[in-house]
Length: 369
Length: 245
Image (cartoon, rainbow over all chains, first blue to last red; front, side):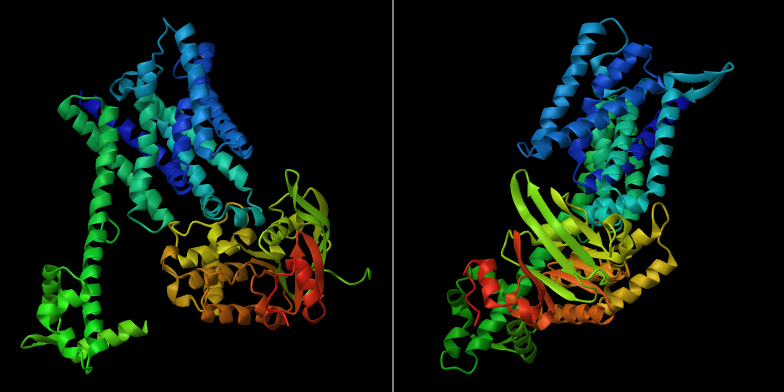
């Protein structure tokens, strides 16, 4: 059983990393929906190859699925190019069409063979280690570990070799074209990888949750870094953390492993989204609150500065009437005055406020800008 | 027609159309080497499309483009391109130095990675545009003028002979505009050919020595003093040029 624990986690990590790497480029190209489309549309490819080989682990399945995946991308772009439908509609039209062909094929011909819809949609990581690769009577470990390991290596090699080309074509496709790096070729290369990765991963986590593995870790990493290389590394790490924590969550509550992994993916994204310094929503809210107070104090300083030394100055700087002049809420006005006194923008002279030297400089600087 | 005189860019009978709607009608344009040429014309005149057609980014319906007597594909290395600033996603996870180094990718070719040499060239280009203090800055943290300077540095680092720039003055502050003009004139002084899509008619005479007036058709092209006349402008803009003397 210990071996089973270990195998499942290893498969989950390898799958998560293999999905996260091409996922980075999909997120940056705003194409994560395309991975959803591919993950569904490869079904007819898998079914047809299954009929031919009568095996779920044949490499032909991966090739056929990858072919269908690339066909999906091609069809979506063909529809889009007519300019009669937009990209989202083109995706929404293409993949259900292909997916339904797969569903019909399964229900018509595969009723009594080992290829059921639940496994296709949801996958079953828990059974993955049971299908072992055997050679000369030795047990060499789970087949899906080899399949996903090979896909991971393929993705790594592709991204390492063409890192520069992928970066350029993603950031600025027209510059890539003028420099002679065929962006269409790079695009279809990437889409082929995504298709292969998706079909490999769907065996483990099913066709729906593949998208969580492809989009989740890169979207999380995107919040954490400004460098593409770090985004790739972080995505891989986050994917692994999601996989392992999802696995333990599933064991703890005795629920579907794939479901638990997708849940931790969302949880960890949410944590980063809320907590990350500088760009998380807490940091943004705090910055906005601070800016609000700073701005209010500057407005107060400018108000006093504008009327300084003029006949109406006494009326304009009376603390009790400030909120009327500025049309501010009285409580808010009191707080702003308190902050401004603390920061020595102003000083209190009986019932009046007067600018300090510091407050005058602040007002002058703000007016010049 | 002198056969011996070289042309930096030679556009002949170029028509570009989307479906049956022509964007450029039978354009002829000769750009001699070493000029600073502005392409002006109203919105929708096809200025950007002309640049893209020269770069092979748009497939022409008819006609031909030659760069020093050869098709663009054979001359990629000597042509530098500055696209419109709005054409890329500035939230991309990359910094200033990295973007400028992209200008060297063409010289590197497939697979080879940029190294120390590319880094140094990028630093030199960034110094030329006054952006050397920002090398590690994420590119969305720059002002519009600074982003434009980064794009210029990326083209400079290509060390091209011909530069094509699409609206480099769009949305930049006065300081950046002056810096860019100085840079363009420096390029011309070094014998480079620079073609700029331009919007501001007021500055054409000050900034450029050649001009092309374009409105789907070529209205005129040549040295500014001969070509930039009120008659030609009226023909280009259809009598909507109020400022002309």
